[in-house]
Image 1 (cartoon, rainbow, N blue to C red):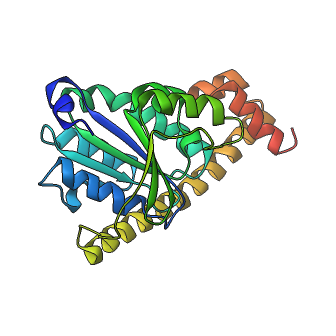
Image 2 (tube, rainbow, N blue to C red):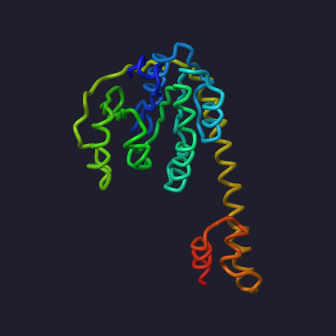
Image 3 (cartoon, rainbow, N blue to C red):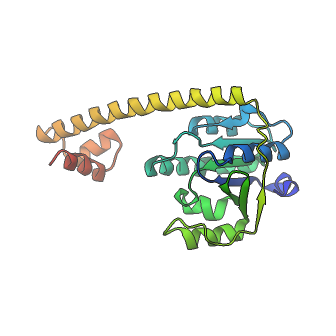
Length: 236
């Protein structure tokens, strides 16, 4: 992980990729503890809001793990929003020389800038206890070669094994994760209700000639194309 390099003038931004249950959390926590002896459950986050707060309040040279364990980034829309969050906070990550470990299910869903350029390396969990490691240049080759079919066929720098040792209090970890899942589910429910209300408003405004598409887009802070998509879904 080149700890000394990070502590001089940069950060360590590593992706941990693999199917749920293969050990991304286990290995990323072990690595976080290795680079930051004070690493604890407070430095594990489960959503973008927690991630932003953790980076903002982190001590210099500390480790943060974004643990995507609940489908939070499963859709393209969610991943797109998260990529934007990452780009926003990258300068602060670097200024504090943080070690940031991001657990995600699919390497190829990352924005190209994050996946190819900004991340230091990537660790692909092949199955429980086994991983393949890609350094900066090899990771770029993997992204370019495998993007179309989401293929991890590009040879890694090396392969290795890791133990099943869970270095945090698992009961407290599961409790914190469940709280995040409940919060995420409630947000999704609210988002669904809000979208229905928005779509109803759009259709009634257009049908009643109260506003045109451009005016509606400005009021709702969305694109004219989105207005068109909403109307198309209604059969406009």
